[in-house]
Image (cartoon, rainbow, N blue to C red; front, side, top):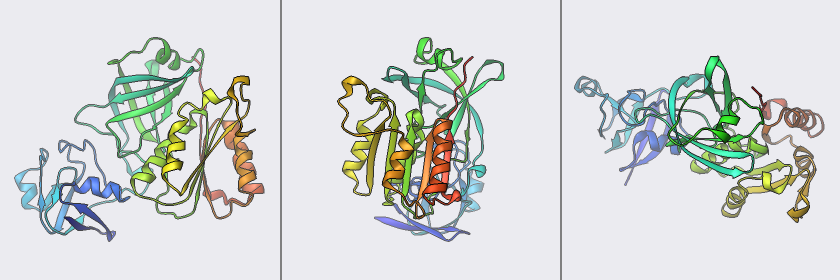
Length: 336
């Protein structure tokens, strides 16, 4: 059984199963409501039930007076009837609170010779709300910060996943590859960034990743799939050699399972042993060859500054992409 839920003042509606929390159902249908811990302890997702009834669940941060006033915690409450709610919706990155949180290293998984996938577990009473594509800062000694995009989608927030490329001499990446271990504690601050999925638009998307710029692209794609989006997506992943495509099966699986997704890997300098028969050259030039007219598309690009700048120049100048349809995140690398 499912129930129809209306969110006011926006008038947005969605369906929620009887065994599904209001927050989970909203996120699944592309409505981003405020939340914090997702466990009933912080009260960040508190809103008002205007009409209908709910099972309040284990809402620790909800008092009897709150219930009498019609309030509920949407991370715990499950519908028992059709509902009308009063709740603010998150529509832009600046509406999400920035937090500083400790995070314990849960796993360090080597994905390539110079790429580690870092899994960070947040405190049990906290979750980091973010938009698909955003990044966090790792806080280091002496006030230094290192920024990394989150590779997990917002709904999959048990761990924060970061794809970290080793920069020889890098103050933080040397630690990741040489000394950090499981159960070590880091401090992170976020979310940050204006590179995130514009969910209300309907144009076909071209997603361009260079190297570990695949991390936020992964977040965008998994979030869109979670929401059931069928917007056409063409994913280009550029790297030097085959080994640098450090999660090669994942985008191929997306494309095989979803007819609206196409995946195009591009190598700039294939190694002799790669036996590469795919596309070669610069990744943004592969996009231009396939899409000489981008006027009806949105482009999300993430990678090294040279790639980001060349893509913007050529896509908007030669391929007729509107400048306001180009969203980019430029990765820069810092040594110690």
